[in-house]
Amino acid sequence: MVPALACAGLSRRFGRRTVVDGLTFALAPGSLTACMGPNGAGKSTLLKLLAGTLAPSEGEARINGMDARRGGAALRRTLGVLPERLGLFGNLTVEEHLLMAGRMFGLGKEETRLRTGQLLRALDLEHGRETFADRCSMGMRKKTALALALIHNPSVLLLDEPFESVDPASARAVHDLLAGLPGRGVTVFFTSHALTLSERIATHFLFLDHGRLVRLAQAGELEASLEETYFDHLPPLSPEDLPWLGSSPS
Image 1 (cartoon, rainbow, N blue to C red):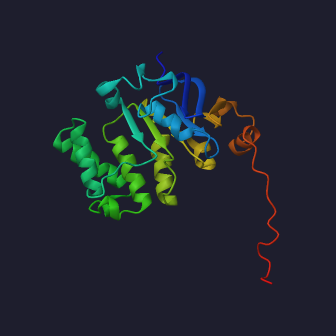
Image 2 (cartoon, rainbow, N blue to C red):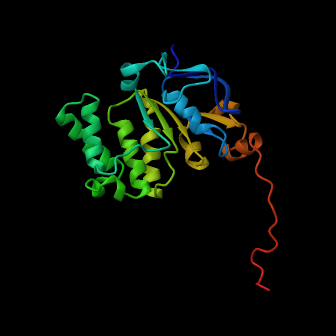
Image 3 (cartoon, rainbow, N blue to C red):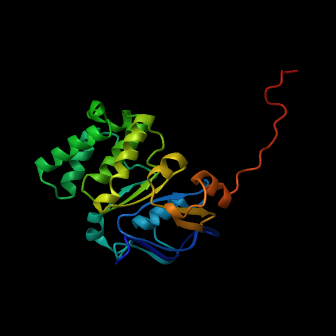
């Protein structure tokens, strides 16, 4: 079976700083993987390398057997990406983004409108469908970008912090939507700091620290809760005493 996602010796350097350091792993179709680690661990950079929007310094990334940088149109049709920078157009409404994307991916006019309406309802965007992107809240922008990643029915989703900046009801809706995708054969790889939500839906957990793969495990292989496992591999920060905080001004 061809892996849905695979890396071999994947590295990325910016000047002298190595952000992704020799990653090698493979994920089967229909897996739902949470990529976890502290800020600066290399999660967003890894996602860009997988999406083919950033060239590796060494090694390679492959999506459904295709080189992430050279897969071209065939790869783009199978890939949905929620990027770190959402890439929305401020002078387009939420609905206009989806209508444009559907046609760009070759969907017919009626199918595009059908899917647009369904995504607006699923992500609680219907009330803001006529809002211009530059007037949207961060949560609305995040959900619009997620809808753009879904509209063409990709077989692989790469999502950067899908639960960040959205309200609890929307986070639950995104959670439920993602949870149902592996059963339909869709592979999902997402970065997140939301341990509780990630633990509920992920089939695999990938832990990064300083660009290196600390551990890749199936959900059933974790010896403890996700929070405990996270801090076993990625120790918490040592608390700093701030004796002046809360004291009365002299």
